[in-house]
Structures are given as structure tokens and as C-alpha cells.
Length: 306
Ligand SMILES: Nc1ncnc2c1ncn2[C@@H]1O[C@H](COP(=O)(O)OP(=O)(O)O)[C@@H](O)[C@H]1O
Ligand SMILES: [Mg+2]
Image (cartoon, rainbow, N blue to C red):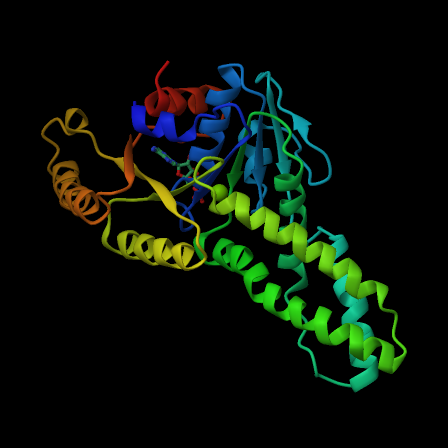
């Protein structure tokens, strides 16, 4: 059990947003869902949100979880799930942007403005609606792998500048070119929404950004670069969860396991030194996978206690 991780993740009076990032297969879905189950079991109104296009959330709880409305999770009172699928998501923002881009392209012809990745924008738009209307005590995000989630998060920063320019120059241009100026006003409103959402992400008291990693060379380096990337966006990573640690008591003279555990011990040391300012929690490698409410509760107790 990690008292510090529990303190970081617990809501204190306001909605708490928890993010679990990291590369594919390290245990993000496991950590996010186990954390959500723990808070739900302790009486907090909790939602777990996946922005990963895979069906992992539905598979984990053995029920269909879609992207439109929150679905109450069977056998876990206080918990709802939502799976925002970037392939289906249709954000208002995207439509507005398309309308402006359509008009600009019509006016200038061709590739004057490159279209942003509409899928990611739409996902982010839905994601922003969540940050705008806090509903519940804890919202846990099972984010897509690092690179993609970083891009999702970075996008509004790129777009903030773009939008600002569109809004300033666009309105002038719009009247000159006889375009519909109201699209620009709508974009300005959207920009405001995005700025507000990003402020929530940057706020340590309302948001905890945790990265999951394995005690191995490449995950350590990727974690370092994810921390720097998020830091450049003004988003502080506050915790690391080192997953799949081989506990000494399971070795029982097995040389293969002992060698693996030795290797892990070196990397765990390195993690403790390199990432000393962050809260660091460890989750042992279990002898089974984590794929239902029972195994999730086992993980949640290992992490946060009874
Ligand atoms: N500590 C652990 N012990 C045993 N199996 C684990 C552990 N953590 C994760 N797993 C298993 O590893 C696989 C990948 O985990 P998952 O949470 O889906 O990763 P991600 O969401 O980062 O891709 C899953 O099958 C999960 O059950
Ligand atoms: Mg996953």
C-alpha cells in the first residue's frame, strides 16, 4: 500500500481528475480501473474514462461501455464507465473548425490551411466537456499510450495560437471576403473552453498525472521524455507506478526469476534516484492477469490498502 499515492489521488472537497499514462502494455488500464474501483468501493462517485480506441474498458468489466453516455458498472456501485472512441467522436469544435476551414479554403483555394487531425480534436473536445462539467468525486482517465495522449494534450496549445490568429485576422478577413463571421465567435468560445480545461490539467490540487512503467531500460527513458513533454505543456507529473515488480518471496530458488528480479532491482534503484521528487509506488507482478472486478479489487488493495 502506498500512503502517498492515496493522498495524491484522493479528492478533497472538489472533483479530482486522475490520469494514468505510459506506453502500451505497461498497465495503464489496470491501474486506472483498479483506482476507480477503489474509490467507488469507498463511497466516492467515480467515473472511469478511456480515450483508447481499444475495447479494453468493456472487456475489463465484461459489459458494453460506449462513448455517448456513462454506463453504470455492474457489481461496482458508485462506478460508471465511458469509452470515448476517437474514431466515432464528433465534436462540435470539429464542425465549427471545418466550417471555418471550408470557408477559408473556398476563399483562398487549395492547401492554404492544413486540416488538423480531426479525430484527435474531436476526442479532445469530448474530453474537455468532462473537465468543464465536473460530475462526481473522482474521474479517472485511462489514457492512450504516451505519444498520442501527449499530442492530444498538446494540440490546444498549437491551436490556441492558430485560433487567436484566425479570430483576430479572420474576422477582418471574413468581412472583406463576405464570409460568415459567427463561426469565428464560436471558435473564440471554444478556445476559452480549451484554455479553462488546460488550467484544470495544470492544477496540482485538482489533477494528478501519474505515469506507469516497468522497471526496465526503455520504459525509464520513455518516462523521462514523457515527463519533459508534459512539463513543457505546464502539466506536472506527480507520481510513477512501477508495475510488475517481482517480489523476493516468489523467487524460491528459481534462477530465472532471481536474475529477472536482480535486473529489476537495479532499475528500481535508478527510478528512485532519477525520479526522487515524484511519489513512487510499486505494484507486484501477479501470477494471473487483471481482467475482472475480483482481480481489480486485489490490485486496488495492494495500491491503496483495504
Ligand atoms: N501487476 C501485474 N501482474 C500481472 N499482470 C498484470 C499486471 N499489470 C498488468 N497486467 C496485465 O498486463 C496486461 C497489460 O496491462 P494493461 O493494463 O492492459 O496495459 P495498458 O493499458 O498500459 O496497455 C494485461 O493483460 C494485464 O492484466
Ligand atoms: Mg489500456
